[in-house]
Image 1: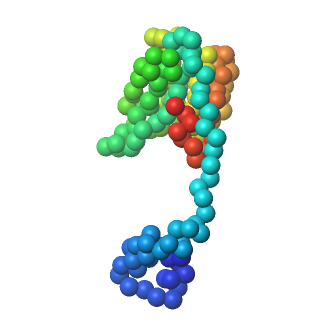
Image 2: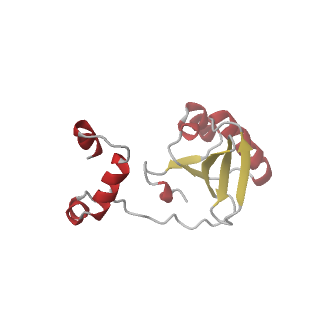
Image 3: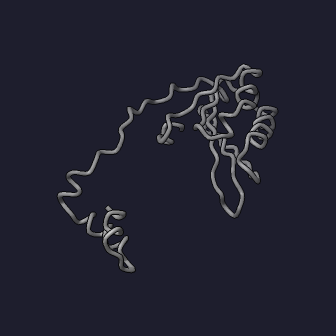
Length: 143
């Protein structure tokens, strides 16, 4: 709608005016497409500590990224500050964590590059860890 209006008209607040008009238009609200729905499923309850862990990156915050690791049984969080959200940093922090807690049976992550690289897949395979990814555009299913 905005691009069509901009091809014919322009004024300083055109974007916010169009957004405000669309939000107050009953016909627009009734005819807009429904958001894509996904069936939510609960993860099975873990039976012991570090059976399944969930990973994700948070940031950037002050030019830093944070690797978040959560144990699904105890809900214990491990948080690591890293310069880059890449496979190298991910594997280094996982090795550090596994040295303290042991290897998990399963890792759950999104489809981010640090978790879908060949190195990450090889690491999981070598250590006998099953890697599951959440569906794209449904990050709530990770945890």
